[in-house]
Length: 252
Image 1 (tube, rainbow, N blue to C red):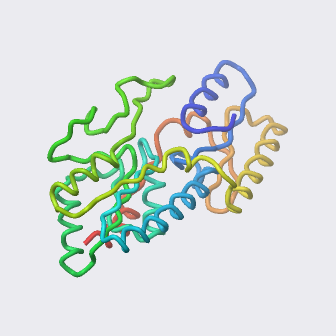
Image 2 (cartoon, rainbow, N blue to C red):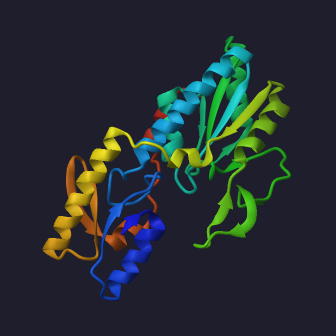
């Protein structure tokens, strides 16, 4: 079974019912416990980084604030990875709620120092306390619709537009937004993801031969290991304060 959190949970149930199942971690969100990396993540981060680099040109030449919305429902791995790599001036992720006034104050400080443009990267599941918004919300999340998907998840998306509108209203700086959406999920994989996928696949076959059912192949450090499917799906792997504090160094 190759997939993310919902796939892992389903595979664990099948394993508990006696089916010989092993898993491999495939998700761009990099949010599965038990493994340092999931294949798909590195590719998504590079796609997002490239997009932010391109947006940077427009932001600087037109003296604009550019908001880039990336995927990340419960975790901000893509936002933090791509944002740090591309030199974003502010990054908003689900793990660390923020207030719109904090974001705007940071942007205003940059302008006061002569930086007439800013790049803000926001994960779709980021929780921001806005001054005003007419969008559908649920506990701070911006919703595409109040309907849920096949797994019962709220359909997120649109926080980029809301964030851009409020930044422009509060600061007076011209602000635009870009939603990368499913472009992050396709295209040619990076070398890292190709090698990682190959290693995980080969190790999964070895697990089958050894009868290590009910486990998931995983990368820990540079070693292939196997962890219980129940452990991999028990909790979401989120961005910790250590990494986010490094990113936040550049917010002021």
